[in-house]
Length: 337
Picture (cartoon, helix red, strand yellow):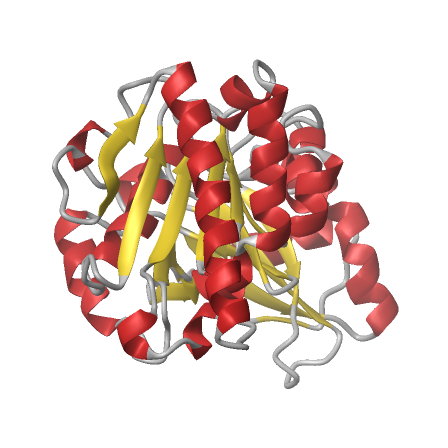
């Protein structure tokens, strides 16, 4: 859409805009800055979004609205319009490998959570999370999102610094990591009994690390002398719902890790395609602040993941809303094979 088309559409639905700025071309969206004469007009524009979608014959996920918080443009909003898929920018495996070269050096466990709207790679430190919940429907790009986070860490940290504990009840998600040098206990846990034992072993490992820290009178793993410091462990659980519904002991052990494992250097990435209150329980929600929501079917599922709606309006194919440190931002995912 052009500025003139937007002006005509807004005029037709009787919305008076002071100015519509030329669009900024993003990875998938064109972002228009719309200025209004007053804060009331800007705030009231959200109530006209459905009328604008009808006027432009655009679906719900094609037009998105977000506040303007740049501190420069007052009484303004951003209107994002999704382009046709043929005009999306390419974020392929080659681009991902290149972008991994720009990981900030001050991060302990750097995780690539996608790119921003203009295509700049975005990293977050898992240590600051300290755990992450990832939800999205089948085909939304959830698995690729998780793999990108894993690969960004193992590409920059040795196996003496970081190990990955993989739990895969579907038995097919993590096969590429068989024999990987960073693999915790040199095993991918796939069967129910092995998964239950592996999670229990992590709790024992956490408790042993706390005993070690207590003996040396320190409160965090990074305060240990380097020659006595065990590696960080990143626990990745695929399809969390399959585990906690079937085994309450596994559920309690995961909650235990969520509550206490941070200082011991054990951090979790919990993923599911069934984001509901039975899977992402109250106890987990209270201890996992970092959330990633990919495309979901209903606003209630978005609320379970993020405590807010919006993920039901995503474009899919890797688009995600990332809440890290309280702020929610749209990110785009890479296409990795």
